[in-house]
Every structure is written in structure tokens, then in C-alpha cells.
Length: 74
Image (cartoon, rainbow, N blue to C red; front, side, top):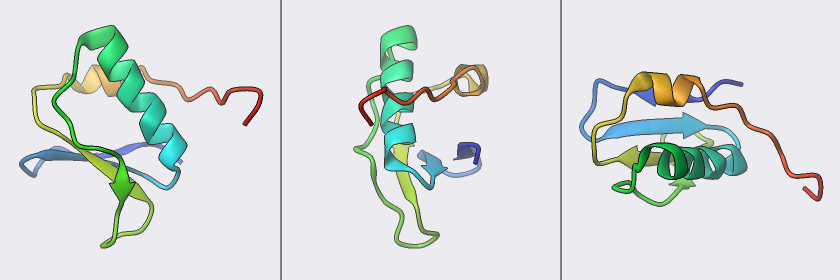
């Protein structure tokens, strides 16, 4: 399942069924592009799954280049 981003809302919301995927995406955005202004990953009570909000500009290509690779111990 791909990460879904709602660019039409303010703040931008980022959604996925798996919390681990979103936490890995948060690290990718922080470590590679300095994106720090965002919410915690939380349960999406309206649509199910999980989400977080971005409070600073983010190039859509940064999210598109993200690939989730689970750790071996997971």
C-alpha cells in the first residue's frame, strides 16, 4: 500500500495503514531534507490507519523517493 498525501489541506496530511512506515518516512524526511516541523504519528480516527501532519514545505518528490525497508528484527 502506498503512502497517501493530502496536499489540498492545511496542514498537509500523510496517511498509511502501518505506523512503522510513517515513522520511517518521518526519519527519511528529517535526515535527508531537514523536515522537522510535523506532528507525531497518530491513529487516523476518520479513515483508519495512521497519519501525521507536515507544518513546513515539502517537495512531493521527497516522499516519492521514499522506500520502506523493515529492519530484520521486526
